[in-house]
Image 1 (cartoon, rainbow, N blue to C red):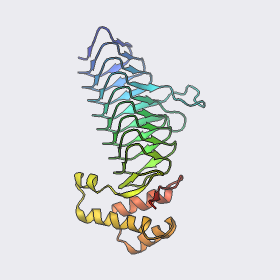
Image 2: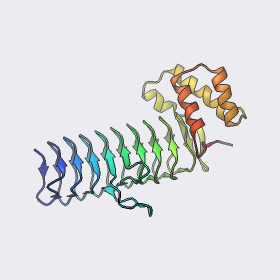
Image 3: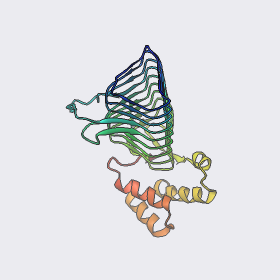
Image 4: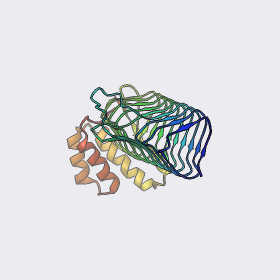
Length: 260
């Protein structure tokens, strides 16, 4: 059975899984699903459209599935989704989607720290860490295992590739390719995220292969098209090589520049 504090309000038609704890002064609306074993702290507001997985922790002051801050929004039925095992810290705001993707979604096992904002139609992958006060505008896409330092600001429609690390206080106006570190102002390539890759089991050989790819992109004076052609011609095919090449070829905003 779920444990609803008598000073909380849970709409009788909300779908609350077993062993869910709901603390006092929390409000949960009608069209809400919360999975087994989740903990919803005090003073949390969960609006219609929230889809919360198993063993999720949501800390005081968070507002989940609020109406998008988008003047084009016309009240369409959309969702805000949080994957299993994720933690949402104090005063986080996660707006639900619009007609663009019909959802805002965070994957499994993410840590979203205090005062983060996720705008409408953001898609965040699994095992991401989003530092305190980071702000993601609408339509941002973040792949798995990305880490944001605190107080980053990410422009709408930006994409961040898997295993990237964004230094604290960064203004992210361009796409950040996978496996890289991004820092400085304007945001620039600061090497590959070798520490994070080692922590996730990448061998030195794979890390060196990724490093060689980015040397070609950022350190040899080639434009992106020239660099990608050279990479495909001269470097052995691998999952990482193809992921990097495809990310850059399909980028609509353009990728961050090298540091100069």
